[in-house]
Length: 97
Image (spheres, rainbow, N blue to C red):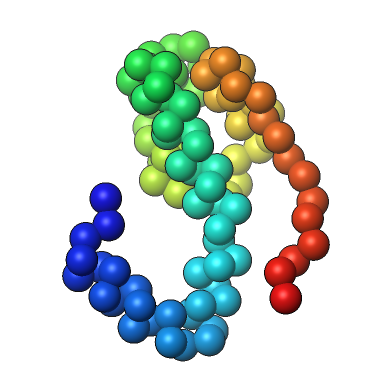
């Protein structure tokens, strides 16, 4: 949940073009993170249960959910998607202007 003070701070930071670009460059990563957590919660699975189903250690799943998945392999993400009865979709899109 984003608090009012965070929103205010973020709005101030967004005035800096370099910060704004860096923030928006992470959009796809934030989307993946959010969809992974929502799928796990919708499935009613704890991180421990997801760990058991995928063979991925629970602390690694926790790190992934906190945004530490930039080095995660496609194979790891696919295991998680399969365990969550989801399909992993990876595609290239033109960068925004």
